[in-house]
Image (cartoon, rainbow over the protein chains, first blue to last red):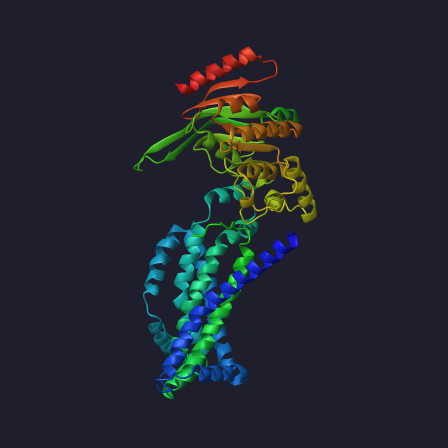
Length: 268
Length: 257
């Protein structure tokens, strides 16, 4: 009897798992179907067949010189985000600790936020020679304000009662940071990475489109000049795959780091 | 100060202490939470600081804990200024707060280990100590539970274990059982008083409940707003039931004024 109910439970779990996979795949399958349907009625330079796009994707992934362009873009995104994160953390701590720094830096960062990414691309081309430095500069300045404000928000939102409790044990600065600050700001920091990853992937393409001789943005420019929609789509998908992959890594970190959180049986 | 003086010196001394919040220029003006208060608490005493909400109990508590500094006068704990010599008190003062204040990202045992980590106790040793305290407080088997999986009473037990685990000489408790149901609170009060006496600690227990002050304190200091002493009563075992009732009535009348 127990064995029967256990096998029943197992099959319910399988059904649930299958349903979740189906729900995850369904929207993309629908978009692909609409695209493929359109490819039957429009010329290939407007709506290429997904089979062509697939082969182009495979060609990028299997050809080292093409794949190195994808890696270059991914590296630029990560380097830019890491740079912005480090500077954002430094500025964030400064703003939280000093009212003077807050009054001085916050308006500057808000002003920076208003400058379009394309303007930064132009400034970078005029100011700097090295391609990599240009792109790093653009990535850092465009994502820095968001990172800084998110770090400031996370630090200010630290629960005061927990902070006092930890302080009552007289921790050293390092221990206070490790035991209190880091775990309490981590959820917002990971969210900031997720949000900024999307922004950075858009900015890097613009930067490469105008100021680089390699990378996904540069390759997109080539496809545009050749009127090659299948190629443009294949290169775009490489970037999307990278973003999805990195989002998945961040989600894994979240799942591990926030395993202490209570899960309500009733969802929002 | 001679060694004899040190031995007889109070553990906690308030010498003409006042604490003022705000400033005359501020829209809300000046608020005097503590007014010219002098109080000595001896080593090994379990003192209940009793008063109505807003009478300055928590302000006194914060000054003893070194979390805030008096505006006038001096607060000394073990002869040291707890605010200025903040780090000197590492491992010497432990606090049980009104709510449990457990770190949600740490399991019960990791929460108990927190104070021991500040003292750089080796991992195996602090794990043993934390386990023993959890066991003493009836939480064996819950070591690896996260706070969200524990009831309110269990969480407060963890916070008591966290305070005792550091073996601090002075325990400060800010209405630690006020959020619990009466039966659980009663049980924890008894346990707490037993542990304080068994381990020879000095404890300051803040409460607004007359019954709680009677249950726990071997000295009851009644405060009136702004924190000044209305009554200072020693509650030895010699005080009989009739006398206790009289004291209770006096305190009740004093607090209701």
